[in-house]
Image (cartoon, rainbow, N blue to C red; front, side, top):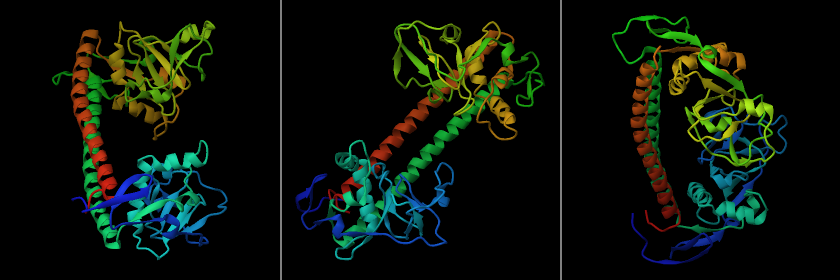
Length: 431
């Protein structure tokens, strides 16, 4: 790639200059909006934020709101430039690979024929404008507190017009280059998945079989746990804790003076407490229930739903309370260390228990009694428990170092992809 020989002012707000031989024109002279009737055989087409516009059934069928009556639905055809008015700011713009139908919030655009137009080039261009924040700023300037980008706004946008063969070359280059970058990202994401699976396997083995290979085994009495070392103990969770308390499906109304944090299910992820969210203050004193339910550092929190079975250890210096759909666990550290219990509740044995409660499929809600009856196995001495905890913490540290390295590489690849697209569609570099 190299730069063009000469440039000129673009007259376009989001790009300062374009190659001298490029033209500019408002989108209404490049594209028409099509409003076609729906055919009986048409299935729903969805514009996804990654730029793919395809039949919904080609990607996934869950997580969508389906209309009971399809008022205003329109026909979409393969090759249409499709703009999702409410999601365009996030990149939901692309060329449809299928015939189908969509809601009226979509704009299906086709070239007018008066100017050279490769719809795939303009899909790349519009997605670059979206990811740069320009589309969001434009739509918010038109409608307060809105991110809508409708055809009425699109048609007035001035857009660059490279020669048709240049548009074709840019599309071919970007298809190939972005596919290479996406493949590299997918490879790194898969490596992260494998590292996380390996970590889960290490945890599961250590908290049910220990660290010694030559130990005699016995039945734990639980199908979820299986065999355990002969000298280990097997108990229900309620018999190895000082207390298990429920948030009673509400956030406490009162709390001591000062700032405090409310633990919600979204804060409990993969064995860790993610301290993201607002701090609260309340000077009203605190109720009897809150006095009984205030969690302390070293205690565990487990989610009852959304999702069920996530667990975290409250860190040193924690000041806060449990939010809705969470429970607190106070381990009896004379029997089992809190960190050992944390690892056990991240193991396959616990996952198997949760699955069994759902009659073969993972439950979406853990009842209080089910949490009380979680089967547990552990060494009889806290010294051996601590050895297992130390081993797992070291393995976790090593895994995290590699994961963070791969995440940094993924961020760099995504930045490279954005730069390559931006520089080519805006004419700053020549293909």
